[in-house]
Amino acid sequence: MLNFDFYAPTRVLFGKGEQDKVGALLKPRAKKVLLHYGGGSIKKSGLYDAVTASLRRAGLEYVELGGVAPNPRLALVREGIALCKKEGVDLVLAVGGGSAIDSGKAIAMGARYDGDVWDMYETQRPIESALPVAVILTIPAAGSEGSGDSVVTNEETGRKLGYGSPHLRPLLSIVNPALFMTLPKEQIANGVADMMSHVFERYFTNTAHTDLTDGLCETVLRTIIKSAPIVYADPSNYDAWCEVGFAGTVAHNGLVGMGRQQDWACHGMEHELSALYDVAHGAGLAVLTPSWMEYVYKTNIDMFVQFAVNVMGVRGSYREPEALVREGIARLRAFFTGLGLPGTLTGLGIDDGKLEWMAKRATCAAFGAEQPLGGLQKLYWQDVWAIYQRAL
Image (tube, rainbow, N blue to C red; front, top):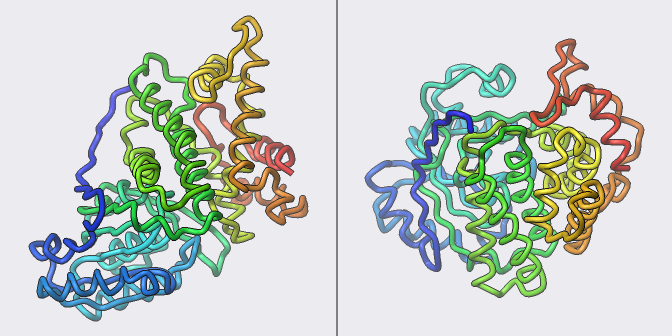
């Protein structure tokens, strides 16, 4: 096991009705809030009215900025930064899923920076501060409610980049699974694939002696595999939503990755898909992850046998490890397609026309300074291209 520094200061309020407390909880930390959200769903559901009423009861001023799109855009982030500076905002309250939260974190970071916030995504320079961020989660998927990470798309250049800092971890996240019951099936499926990928990126490792975090990863994955089909079939099942919602937070708050080298190749490859084709992040991950597994499993076949047996429930002879692994990957692919997710890039509307170029962008070979993806196995642009082709 490797040395680690686990820091997870986010206070999580979980359960029915907790969103009504947001004003009182933020009162000690803010005078003026930026209320940041996506489309009109929070207004149709009544959540917008509940949140603004709570802020008013607490005597908090607020300004608002809606319009966050999936794969959040840099232009709106810049608009939010300018609004915060103009209005003297001292806290960002993001209401929505991962896109609204990531956009809110970018705004919080840029509000304390004199230059262009995109500098941070390109240079990965550490920040010294950011406005505090609070969250009311409406879509369990990205895990951004418990992480210090933010991913933003620069629509001018077509690049989608991530940035992480302890200063971006929300101080408060409210997770009410009852708010998830109106989600369309497509969003449920995409969210499930996203949260499972957050575990996979940490689980598949060459680091030895990580029994505890192995077990945590496997339990989170098994919980999702058990409960996700229940909420997909019956979105009104509150208890199953509790399992899925909690799993999504734990999958990305850092806990299941402690003490081990992590991978993140699938996320790096998928960011090219969603940046260029604007596909749903979870759908892209559902296509790429099994293809990545098929390409790299021989690097550490024991890890993939463990996955097949402990997570996917495969039974067979340990003398035939490749058969176990192949069956585990097949079951994962079948799980995704059983939720209505695409099984191929073609199913996402992506052909082979730009795959080589995308592989070079994903590894930065296109920019003259190649940075291979992955921890389990280093993937250069030729490897990424091969995985894209395998996923067609």
